[in-house]
Every structure is written in structure tokens, then in C-alpha cells.
Image (cartoon, rainbow over the protein chains, first blue to last red):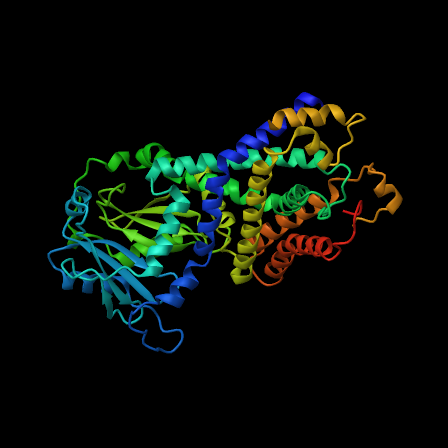
Length: 414
Length: 78
């Protein structure tokens, strides 16, 4: 490796690392509680929902039409906006609102929420729970919710919405660059050192360097994968926006000007679920939005289906069912960039291999934190050491061919 | 892992070593671990994934334990 190249790699590693270390530390630390959020939630909060009735196994589910009918009977003046069977529990969540316009207008008032929900037992169609009324005193926010909420928002966007998300995405890219340049330097630094050496018996700085190299090498691929998939995740808003203005707009164009039909004249909801299931075999239908929903069609049920395997669990395929006739209009697999995004998610979240995988994720995360901290220590310590002493401490020979690159390194580090 | 004849180590000039076999092995294990749980979904593939992803951690711990358990090893033996 020539002097100039080595110097360039060193400068790249130093500056990319310095740029992203603080944010990477934030992400690594806040990621830990997020990894176990379900368990933390269950342990400290739980839910106060009434327990499910014990029914013989294999009890069939009630028709969704019955459930929707009951919801409508409870609030005859309102519209149904969404029907979502629960993934894990025998429950169906029905969302309602005074009107689509009322929901839209909520954006203008920070504290107004016109929508509300009713939770039904999927098998008996009995009401289990309803969202608290709008005028009910707000339950005090629990510590768990506050901590998990803060972590999630810091992790995703530093409380700065879309600009924050894009910034964190950029930091993910810088992190990947830092990993790549670090790998190049690793090859140079470890030339005469067996893998895994930690030189504790000499300058403290060497022990930090060796620790940085060892942990960096052990976590390299994991950090690359999680860093890159994190970057992809931060792009979700623009990517979904792109899809919305391209494919979705094309699909919905012929219907865009139609009026939203009254809800008592729509085709049955259960039949729409069955139609969607047949349209995308192997997928589970996770929700149905009624005609008129934002970003939807005025005359279609939009049903979201998703794959049943971990790889495809976040691969959503929307299905349009004409709500006037009940006929299938089509299933629309997502474009490649959104499929890529959806496949990136499990690889970022580490939630696809049970508790042991989560624990491994956490341990690898802690190791990355050590790599970040040791990198900072090396950077801070280096500034105090005179060049020559540093070169000797690094164990380089000053009297042979190593000299040129090493002094280049010293230059670059200045 | 780091067996050097003392004389050579003390001379200050270390012989060149193969840098990449260990990092590549650990990297391949990580890739295998990440994908086997994702594609295999259950049973043996999950267990293999846990094992494969544990190995980089175990190797790191072994290296650290070795380094810290030989504090008097002055000079070369890293």
C-alpha cells in the first residue's frame, strides 16, 4: 500500500468515525431497550384488557360482517374506517370516526382525535374493550412508556421528524464508510500481529488499539448489516412517498374522481377478506380500510396482506376489492425498492429468531459500543502523544520499508 | 493463536502473519447466522443461527481472557 493511499484511508476512517460516533452511540444505547420492548412492556405495564373467554380449540371465528354490524349499531351516526384482526390474539379491532373529513381535520388541532376503536372477540363477536372517550381524563404516562418512547424517537429521528430520519440515515451511510476504511486499516495494522492479540503489557494505548481491532473484526459483518439496513429503514418515508406518487397514483387514477358511496350500500367485509386471501395465496390479511381513506380509493376496500414467513412477514401486498360489487380489482406487489426495505427490516430489528437471537443482538450491540468508545479513546489519546513515541508504541520499525507508510499515517493523524 | 518463539518476539521484528483468515471466518459465520434464521425459520436452522452468531462473541471472549490471564508475559507474546 503506498504512502498516499494509506494516508487517505486513515483520514477517511478518522473523519467518518468522528462524524458518526456520537449518533452511533445514541443508536446503540437506545436500541437495547427497543430490542426487548415487548418484554419490558409485559413486565412493567401489561394490559388491563379483560381476559379472553376460554372456548374449545378450533372454535371458528365470527363473521366480520357481524362484528362490523355491531360496531355500526353502537355508533349509527359514524363511519367504520378500518377493520384489523389481531395477529396474535383472537381479537378484531374496528376503528370508527364521525367522518373522513373529521379525521382529516384532526391534523389542524394537536389534541383532537376524532377516531376511536372497539375491540371485539373474534370468535364470539362480543365487545371486549373500547378506546377511552375523548373527554376522559388522560391516564398518566407511565415511566415505561416515556422511556421506550424517548428511546424509539431518539433512535429513529432524534425527535426531528423526517429531516432527523434522513440525517440518521446519512449517519448510517457514514458508519458504513467508517467500517470499510477501518477494515482496510485493520489489514495494515495487523500485518505482524496474530489475530486476537491484546498487548496489555505495553502502552495502554496499544491495549485500546488491539481491543478496537479485535472487537471491530468480530462484529464487522453484523455492524455492516445492521448499519446498512438501518440506513434503508430511515428512507422508508421517501420510498413510500415515491411509490404513492408513481404506481399507486396510476392504479387509482380511473377512480380518483368518483364519490365515496354510503357505507350501508357496500359489499360485505368478510367476503372482501376472503377475496383478498384468494388473490394472494400464502399471505395473511392484516387489515381492511374502508373506501375514502386517505391515500386509498373512494370506491375500494384496501386490504393489506403480508407474508407468513419471517423473511416475508414485513412484505406487504395491498389488494383492492371494489366495495360496490365485491369484485377483486387487483393485488399490487410492491416495487423492488420497497421489497428491499421490507426485507431489510428483520435484519435490522433482529426479531426473527426468538429470544436467543435478541440476546445475541444485544451482546453484539454492546460490543459495537466498546468499539466506538475505544475508537474515541484512541483518537483522544493520540493527540497527546508525540509522533515518534507513537510510532514506537505502535511497534513499527522505523528503519525499513515500513517507515514511509507509518510516517504518512502520522501525518494523516495530525 | 499467538505462539511465537520468544527470541523472535523479543527481537522486535515480528514475522508477517496471515491477517484475514480469522476475520473472514467470523464474517462468514455471521452471514450464515443472520440468514439461516431468516430463511430457515425454525428448528435446526434457528439453533444453527444462534450457534453461528455466538461464535464471534465466544472467540472475542477467549482472546480477552487469554490476554488478561497472562499479565506477566512481558515483551513479545502479545
